[in-house]
Image 1 (cartoon, rainbow, N blue to C red):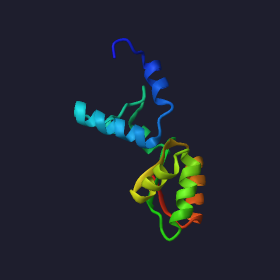
Image 2 (cartoon, rainbow, N blue to C red):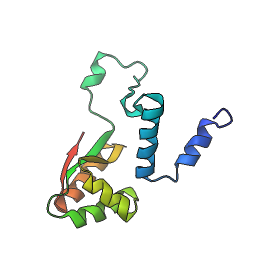
Image 3 (tube, rainbow, N blue to C red):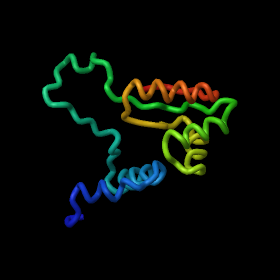
Image 4 (cartoon, rainbow, N blue to C red):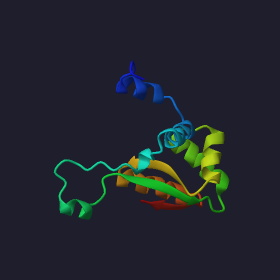
Length: 124
């Protein structure tokens, strides 16, 4: 990896599906013994009041598909750009994140769409 820049690595990851990226994270956990999603980076100058501020990035978690599983799969496929199989796997594997690190406004819109299809959804 000494010859690859961070930009080269990002460029290589851009075309990957969420399922492929999850597999990569799992491999990193196994190889390095570290969960990359557990690493917290403090913002420069973040004081004691930072924890009280409203979140600027949230995740939409599909708790379960409810009665409208097929509709939920279609919406997940549309929202994430996943293929049909990957979207079905995500829905079948609930609870799972549908989208992460997005604005609260976008999360609310996604939650509404999924709930209209019958899903149970949380925003974290």
